[in-house]
Length: 394
Image (cartoon, rainbow, N blue to C red; front, side, top):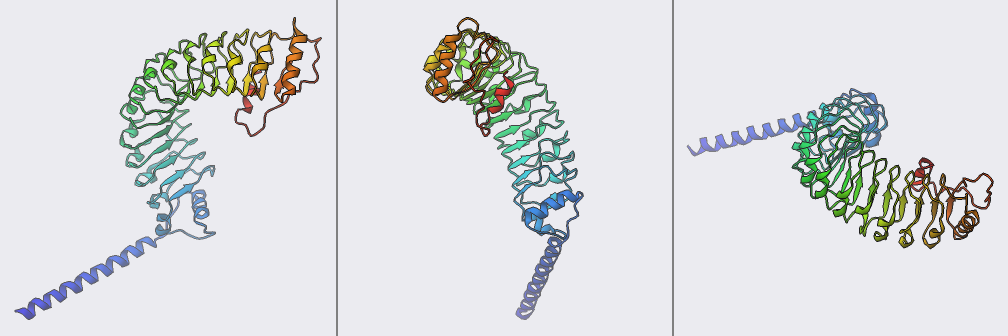
């Protein structure tokens, strides 16, 4: 009896070893199986990333990918990427992609960038529960249902789509950054439930009610250009703001911008503002863009000791003597104002003083009889990201 039991045990062990060996062989064969890409441009991009010059790729090789950048390759199909099961980051910007099905089982992805494609359906991405940052700007999206499946999403960039309903954002309380301008959003109320939001860009939409914005007291960067805003009282509680873009609205009063100690970059171009004095109590402003308003004087700016850029084109200024108090000023733009008609000697003296202190001045006197050749129409450094604003403000 004991001998039979021993024999049986040995047989079971042998069977187990055979099965293990067979499984290993099968797995090795599967991993060595060649991947058939649907798009040669995608295959070339993967080969480049893996440092392989020529040849076919295996499933094992694809599984080694953790980060992949295939932007700008004119790729139309992602077939083959389904075997990149350990991919953490994918940048597929600026291609011709419309079908995301090959990505459906890439559940390890944390960062996914699909901007500038032809995508209308995000359903294949519903299993990506690890995703932290997602960008699909300038596509053909109309709804955000898939976001309800992403429990740890922190950043969303969905600019330039056709989204009208953002109710799926309502419970995304960990969301820190949201870029969703240039859509057709009507209701902002879901934003009121996002207390951790630090960055919000939501201009050029269809909403008319801004009550939800009163709840976003933690914002540090807010962009609401082209939103037909007249009342900006929601800014009062946003005392942590550092950057603010309210360009192309119909704002007359900016009292809500008083007492914002962190505010350093402000774009108020193309509005109806005549009084800048509320900014006097926000002394950390370094760049102020207020071209194309109705500003007649610069009262209040003398306390802006940190200001470096001041763009005042196309206003109603007749005097600029206050500007000599701005000791940190580096760039000044004054084209298309009333300066130079009645007080040219005073203006010329101020400009000369600013020029001698190193200020780069953009100025064309309105009076055609006036000549001030010593004030150059210089430009700021090309590497300054705000340099283009000067060309937009004339």
